[in-house]
Image (cartoon, rainbow, N blue to C red; front, side):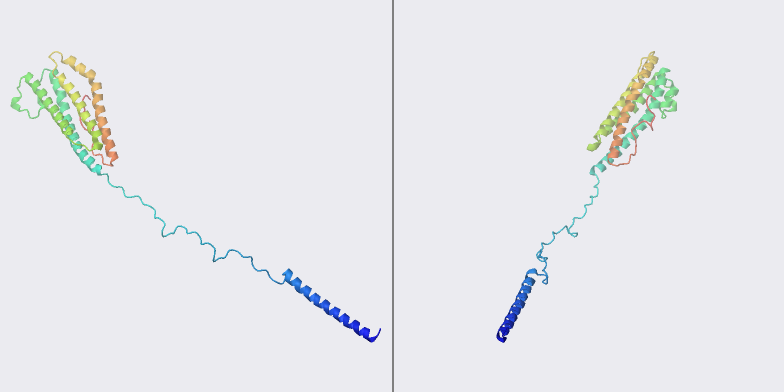
Length: 259
């Protein structure tokens, strides 16, 4: 091989070697761009914090409604009227008991005097105001005065019933007013039935007394039931308005009739 050809071969080899190096550099550069191994990937874009919708407003503590407290109970304006009415009924019931306490012993004494022919000593028990100088009243007059004394007590009881009828009860007390007035009527019927026994013709006193004794359970039951009904209405009324029960409608503190 000549020197010229050897020189040409060396130049060609260098040229090929240089081309290879350049190709290798280009290949490495291409691979680095394509694979992205040395170039870190950026974060995946998500919703921006600045662009995120604001949270929905909840109930503000300052604006929350305060718990409602029950309004204080107002006093029932009808309670005062009922209480005033009951004060009047209390006075009437006290008067009724007083009349009954006076009437029952007088009636029993008069019946005994009628059966025994009208003894003056028994008449004296009816009327404490009977003057000592009048003790010699004829026997028939003593019986008449005994009946007059009893009639006076019955009239007093009737007047007390009229006093009740003259009351103007508030509407819630109408039940008590009606029941109590009915009790007065029943009571007076019983007393008048006993009073009529005193007018029995002479010689029939024992028969009349036996008849009254037969009727006694029915009469006693009627007047007791009427008083109990009125007392029940009194209880209902005082409980409804929270009032103190100051009295009762009964014969518990009075001498009963037919007992």
